[in-house]
Image 1 (spheres, rainbow, N blue to C red):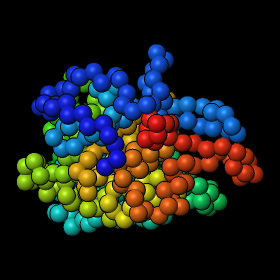
Image 2: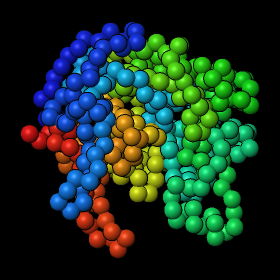
Image 3: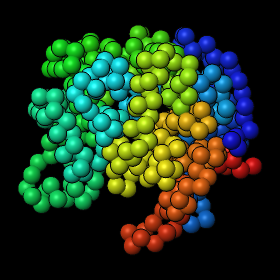
Image 4: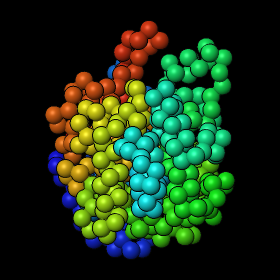
Length: 369
């Protein structure tokens, strides 16, 4: 690993993290205006915009291998932790009871594009558990995939809950509830057994007490819990290296990791960071974007977890920051350089497609002096 910042803080992950890591590692710019600048956007010879944020790399012991900004600040993890939310699907026995496979498990961890393959697989999964699109409580939106959205409109059809990027995750929730004989209606509520079970998993995997943590409704209406960034990274590190987990949890995590890494298209889709980076790395890296600039990654070959939060919530900055961190670790070595390049330094273009600038990691994040 190329990051020189080897700070072992010796965290006790049995309680909420309360450490102040407000100083940034490396040479990322930091001033009184907020966290360090992680990403710059150039146009011509000038830096036109800057994105601040926090990020860290951690191993399963809690030793921080690199950090930028305030890693103790709680953030809403949004969709970046769908891998954790899928754990009860395995541990409850629901996954095996309904004879599900890697594609369904990847969809449970996904924020998919709503392409036909995603929609058809979720619909088939719902049918397998005796439910339908009408049982989903995630809401509707047009497919993220532009061509799929255009095709839907051209057919004079309206999007359904199946097109919602979270429909796979919600189908996983319904599967667990159906298997355990719980009410399927209202499974999105904070007090429903499905969500309380997930809350327990989040506490165990992050090492944070979350019973009194702030929470709110996510975009798909389930509870999203405020978790310190260092807790998110620690959870990802435990997925990367689960040897310290109880055997049942370890087995569940390994199954999720396998599906996550082997089905990159189901996790996101055409033209998406998660799918393209995982394909380029041939399953050696698992990444998962969340809304509002949250991002997590699992690196089994290194035994590391990564978590980051872009302060202004910009997805373009989250993509570039995560690519820069993966490159800094060495996880992108040997990956397709064309794919890596378009996510590491995507161009800023005119409406004619002429490149006039770039989005790039700031000096401290990119490992420059």
